Image 1 (tube, helix red, strand yellow):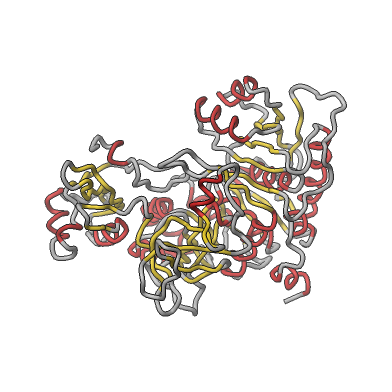
Image 2: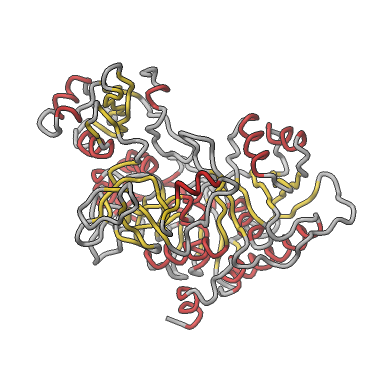
Length: 524
């Protein structure tokens, strides 16, 4: 290990995103995209990325934006979104938003963020434009440089701001806020999660160490870049290791194998539904699969069914590393290790960065084998939600952050999740883990996808229900699924309602969502 690499992973040189980029080899490739999407542009090396960071710094200061000023970013997936996040974070606070939001969603998020400016694509004319104007948020347009490297761009203002300068210039400090994201808000008003440079660079180091990333690695990113998974696990962890990331324009199952062939990545990271979509098309792309040189496949953001993990490994001949992350931890908290260490299907692995423990309702840490709430503490964990003392009083206890997930740690230190506490089904006092039911249903040979959820019941309060998608060319009835479960689950865990769908509703990042599913399917 050379001195730069040692310093990188020991934390000496990675207190800010600017520091970790500055530490890299100028000539090494930093950001690219699948050649079929690149329109002849060449990949961006670290020297070019450093130049872009400096140019963006000057531009932002000229527009009156400096350290800890918030800049909302609404851009399509791709290399410019990746480089915009990295370069803007070096000088200000980034706030990426989903470009697919509607007017009301943009009104809520932009009002809540109190952004000083918003970055939009040069051609963007959607509802976000009117919302930004109505809120008085200055619009900065981003235009890719067609004759320059992939990911390079220029910023220009729709309305020049005469002579106004940033109040606090200079590059960001370690304690400055680099990124703000909202929680999903599935059961309550979304909360703002501020993440510092220290949080993000620590998480990038944790992921790089877990995956043994090096400058020889190349990641294919298919995750949305308004979400912590893609931003940190794919983009920042790669750049922190001096490796490269090839940014696809979003996830497209029909193009995925073409991108894999063109990019020839050493790894990719995705949510389980994306892995399942890729697996479904693998038989039609056997020749490409045979040529791939994947060192690993990573899965995170929701539980990966063991059946899918096994199928991925059989298909691609590479180990599948399931990890456990959340926004408040700047992504990674635990992960299954690389071979030859043990990987346990159905487990999210061992602590991989922060400390991980199990706690009871009274705040007492529990021994191995006991079920309770997963709690964490470490350098990647946010110091608290913004302007929300009530949420912080609930979320933090004795220096630990409560994740809201239920699980247990076995004698070897492997964490197994049993579900979100808010998703545990309370059937007349009997507690049912939806993840446990999912795993058993997925053993049925005709089932491709499954999500177990709570359905309202007049006397029991909640009843167990499941939505499933069948494998292509397979048939099964609700009665057959329930009969299959009779000898595999206790009676109170067997879904009383099984809904067979062509597609299960997903969230913006491709995750299957349990909360609110009964209402969406007309069962509430």
